[in-house]
Length: 321
Length: 246
Image 1 (tube, rainbow over the protein chains, first blue to last red):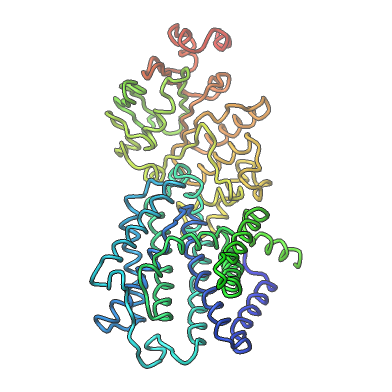
Image 2: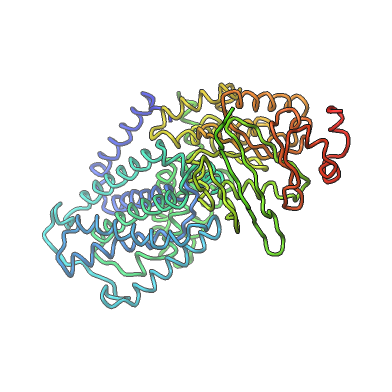
């Protein structure tokens, strides 16, 4: 893997500084909320990309991992008073364990069949939580109000801390993805994506590396889940375990550019504001015009940039150099 | 000269439903030899390859590699012990460049990318593909793809290399080049097993030939012996390739 050029480093630092300053300039709460959602879905996209884009494991069940993360930290916090930061790690581990438990028997499934299995898995998880009294069943869990502080992962007076925490989470997941993509694991993931046969003949333990892809992806998705719970302070299966969320994560990654590190970030930066702002501007009419516009955008991108909008960015970037 | 036995196959059988793809096959390969496996289509050559390299689990029989039992071992384990192979239908990683493809193979013995990539560069220089290192797997001609596949196999640093029809579909010039490459690989001390239909090549480069027909070994011997065998000629060869020995 090539190293970064000076230009790329400068561009990266500039964008980062812009993102740090942005909420201080654009202070309206809804705009900050949209940005937080962009970061969150970008992170979920990056997590999907590790298994879907690199290892070719097309998961349509990421919402299950997201939900397990949200539920684990919330449940531990409500019933045992566990600090949400510890809950964050516990949620990640729980999601990774569940991922391994479902991923292992699915080791031979590829392509469409893996996708179908992932939908079934996520729906089963949702139905279980919908009926599980211990975690509030269909009523969900409400996180109690506490003093706002970083230690409590809770802020009432401003969205700014959430903005920066989510930005940090996104950067962490990008770093994880970068390290994987430029290491032995990334090469092996790409071999597995091509075919199990070729990976095996090159000495790759396919079952093991697939499990690693799924578990890392699940861990990061669960982190986003805990964040969501701490941000909204109320979760139920209907909000954190929806198939629609899983599909949105795939859309963001595919349309942004699967198999590239920044692709899902680009995807989230386009699709989330498009969906949120059209919903606010037109959604109240109840005519579904907002969904039409959103759908049209997705159709156009998949027609003209089937490999992802990231390709376009990369081309412009190369011209600038 | 007493050489070590590299691979030993004993009583190997594999059935698919009612079809006996391999029945009771015995043969061995000494270190440094080139052994060819020939036979008509459906004789069980590829099945034999797959049974040795772990892609199929044989029903009975034993495969050992330098004395170690590798029967029914997983393909990636077989590879890490030192048996590399190519496929009849070429397999390369299409989204990777030539250099990355070979690097993936080299990573079996390296934890970091940089030394693996250096090793891959050396191998590509050896196999004559270095100039095309930045091409994508999909952008290569069939001949170059086959050469790439051999390079990837070599990158895993095997002690035994098994080539499944590396010459099929090549023109005269490409054929010459691949035969030269196989000789070059052998001169480095590699042991090879080759499945091949191109008889001129088989007769030229093999130390010994194993002939399969309907899943059974019908003959084994030097190229000259094989050519003299009536059964082999009837089953497979026809008269013309043996003319050179008369």
